[in-house]
Amino acid sequence: MANETTTKNAPAAGAKPPMLRISELEVYYGAIHALKGLSLEVHEGEIVTLIGANGAGKSTTLRTISGLIAPRDGSIEFEGKNIAGTGAHEIVRAGISQVPEGRRIFADMTVLENLELGAFTRSDKDGIAADMEMVFARFPRLKERIAQQAGTLSGGEQQMLAMGRALMSRPRLLLLDEPSMGLAPLLIKEIFSIIVDINKTGTTILLVEQNANMALSIANRAYVLETGRITLAGAAKELAASEDVRKAYLGG
Image (cartoon, rainbow, N blue to C red; front, side):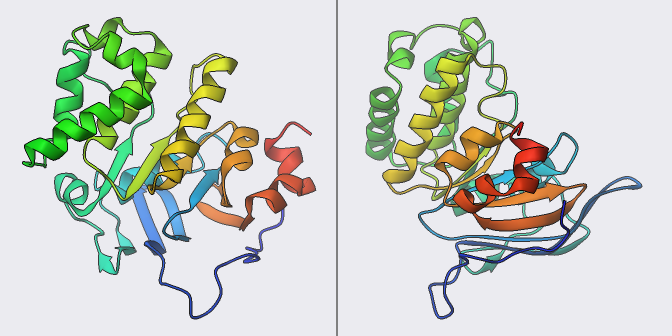
């Protein structure tokens, strides 16, 4: 695959600064160099997807943005403020929430308790109640199972719960890490339809996904990550039509 990063369809000069700007990010796991000078941008209102093979550094990128990993070098600017190395709870307060790979719901707690934990940074009771109803309107199955232990939900329901929990912090930027993992094809379509709906109601989304076909079908722009480096960037439709991308990630 080509190693040159294309910048076609990047926002025009003079446009509003990006909501999220990552510059020259360097991340290590011990002696392992996981991210090597990674740079990307996400503009308000977009769905941006990060695709790549297992071990490319996709989840590491999200975990670094959300404060779970401290970078060795580089900057992460969110709405103009450098948040690199900031504590995860402060990043949630700043307006970023993550739906982690594998869902990571609290299995021994009820659906309601999981959702309440999503609002742990908030004290506006009326707003929390309104957002709880919004989550139940978006995920009716969660309301049906409000008192059920989360660990007894199906995989698709757990993914819905993880997304609902993240939305309870009222994020402006939602990080989604492999939301289709382990789900049946029909459920994958439903989850991706919900992601589009969440975006349409005003939440900006950075999506990490191994199902490159689905990710590129809903994204505005995309980045291809290979062994810690961005190798391609551009409009999602253009990357979906790229022969290099099709051969490497789209089964064709």
